[in-house]
Amino acid sequence: MPPPAPIPIGRSVFVSTLGDDKTGQRERLDRCFASPIAAVAAAQAGDTVFVFPGEYPLASTLQLNKRISLKLLGQTRLFGEPIEIYTSEAVSLEGGMIHSPGGTPLIVNSGIVTVRDCTIQTDATSNQDAILLGGSKSSLLLENCYVLAAGGTTGTDAIGMDNGWLVLNDCRVVSEGANGLTVRNAGRVSLYDCDITGNDSALVADEALVVESEGCYFRCSGIGAAVKTAGHGNPKIHLRGGEVYGLPFSIGNGEITVAGTVWDRTKGMPGKEWIPGAGWK
Image (cartoon, rainbow, N blue to C red; front, side):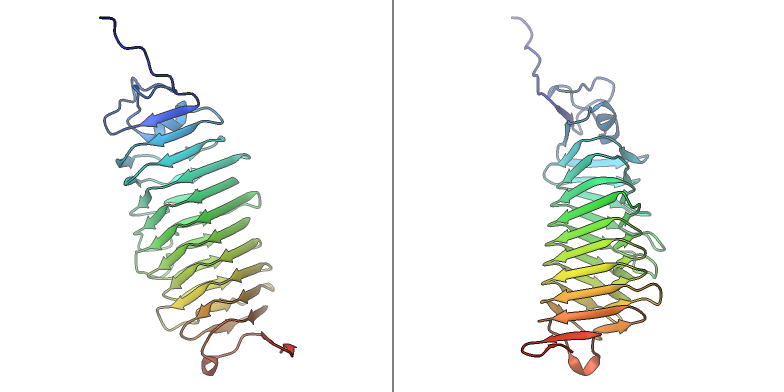
């Protein structure tokens, strides 16, 4: 009996805990790679890298520098060194868990990046965001994701943004030691139906930028304000709907406006509130 014919799978690369980096081949389901790093290196622009369920240690940075999709199937966990994205093209990441115990799991330097249905976690104890977005040519869309900075110490934000464009849709964002989302420099931020919690603050905006939120919940688990502008530039935060818990607002510079948002008015007011029939007050 002749041996079975190879199984061709176009524009795909496969990773399995039973695979082998030495014999792994692009477009061969029967020739899986053992590591995502080797599979991504073998992938070509336009390919999808499928990672079958299991745990995969990243001994070095997983660099996504071409137009590919990375799909983590089922209960898949990548852990160790970060995933770093730098490309002028579109990159997508879907499913599973990206976990960096001592550092930043996901770094976006440039590119048009979409992340869906993913858990992203750091356990770092100082100055390591779970997600870092930087560079004016970077954009990041997060949908149905859970982002956790579980280190529990000051300086470890769940999401830190230095520049670019950030969109969060239906996400839960938690920092147990610092801020849920810190927007440090120029950029654009849009938040939809998210739940954001920080020990210091849920949302902090700095420099000259606009943060727009629709139907989001902001919580501070410590003693700070849930939503605040820092003392630099002229940041603007516009909240529509949703709720703000605890001490709601702190305005160091810039402005905070709300429309139809629930908060304890005895604990502080935003810069402007939309009052039906009266307009902005």
